[in-house]
Image (cartoon, rainbow, N blue to C red; front, side, top):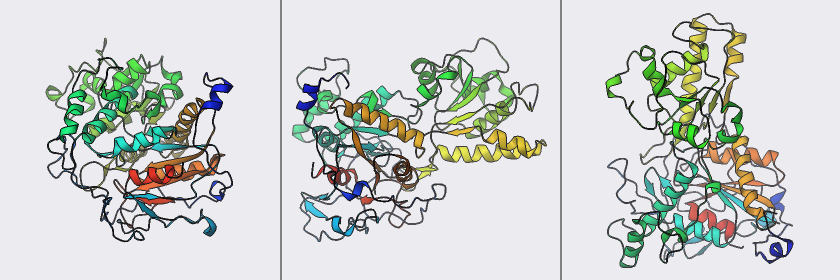
Length: 491
């Protein structure tokens, strides 16, 4: 497998787990309704206090997380989040109950052992960062996973117009940068100054140069799965046809240059060439000269074959109006409705909420889909379209991203490609996330359709707050550090 001979496979040292564990065959926890998350209460205590990320803040309030100190001698039977860390779902029997212990400020859990090798799927926002602020323990967490030879991938409903390579390099850089600073996020510790200087050097320098920070944390393109990553393979049949790209302007570059959608047109360009579509647009203030937007050779309508929503649109109203227009007609400047013109809309993510630096969760791409579907339906009824046709058109809304099984299967395949290098099979998958309706719900769904068990590990550094519905999470942790320690503690 993966180019390794049998002798090489035999020499690989991988963590092994006890196949007799009943955790692998127990019933899945009950799912929740991802459309109606309960966000009524606030998280009382988080993971760590006093950190910044090179002064990058989205607002003046900033973020302060609290983490249990390794010197804390308080009782280990009560979680710092008012949630019992040992309170598991019924999927764990009394004979194999989880025991919470404090070792160096981390929680270890016994009986996480199964046969084969586990795989870990990490969310990013709310797990390794909040907005522009990255958590200082992130790099160390990943090093522990890498040192244990455990396959892992990042699965995010974001992307914001980056390629997989760009996002992987950015995450690595930010995690190393904040790690090199002290806990208060002010002046770096003396031993950290050389690391910061190295991080500021040109990324083009030799990888093998002594002291190069790149070698201290490895994140490959194949380990970075963005919300729209599956578009590259799943929608390859559209690469030779005109498609409307919705999202950050940089998404056009990803769609056209990286994925090969050669006939892609960004919604901002389409609006520029059809200025009457949005009566409230101020074209003088738009960035039509952006190098990411391709020049259009002619003006007028385009017969699009599909709409690809890569990320949240910067102009909600304009996107809602134009998408509705192009869904109803191939030439909206001439005809309002063509019954024979019915094209699909592909959404890269469906999160209603996500966690930024603001104290409360913010609307995500799922909110845009809800708004589009409601307005599109109202528009069709207003012009007298029959309910049968309305239903047919709405059925062309196709959802990717978490919590869809398509997105998690894509991540599962990436995990197995890593395990193949060691001639191992992934026989258990842990999903570490902050959003019950996205990360945990997806894990529960995959547990029902996969041959290996899937478990959702919920962390309290993002969307979820104490008292909210956990959507069937197997365990609740203060942060990703504690969650990873639970998975790897006995490996």
